[in-house]
Length: 262
Image (cartoon, rainbow, N blue to C red; front, side, top):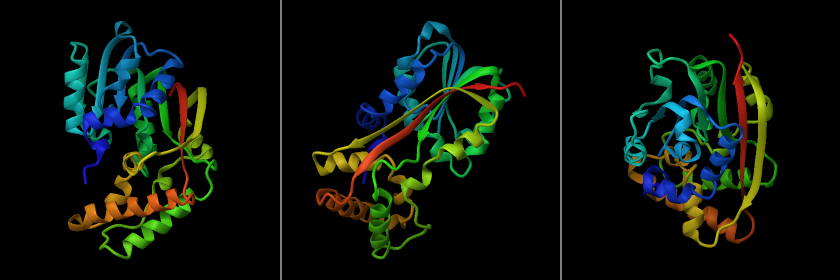
């Protein structure tokens, strides 16, 4: 099964209403200027919401070669550079310290290494530099979302061979205490939290939404049965949704931070 979020064109389509809207809001807190580092840049959407005349140098890093190829086609310019790399492995020592950095909708994917990412961003920024951060946030807006996901996953894991421990997307959400603790090197300038229910008209819409976080489920099964397992997982989850037993919501935290002096 194709994960629509793993291809640039489909990512642009499925992320338009939420991911890009949140990114636009995040960057409006204080328009970036000077040199800008973009971690998990994907297709380079950050550049859609910045004043390019105020950006001296932009460096975007993403682990997906396909996303970077799309970004290079969409945003080619002398002062813009995209790199294919895992941020954890990417050497930044040869770059001068940046005026600002963006880490939008990707910090939760680094768990349990989120502190390493935050510390690396701290070192990459000038004192007083800005960090634009957004990530999946813990919430109690919808009761029972996690329990239904766990119940369905348990049933699917009994049907298909597994190669990893059971994990659902809620394991990749931050809570206020854990995030503030991890950001001890930064001053919080502005924060905003979004929680809103998500509704679906068709199974395809439901599946597309969940595939954004579905890699945590997909990777639990042997390669030979992954497509079957993930298809069964989403179908059973959708049955709970149609029966009004399963509801889902979007929850994210947006933060503008300033790097403290070392």
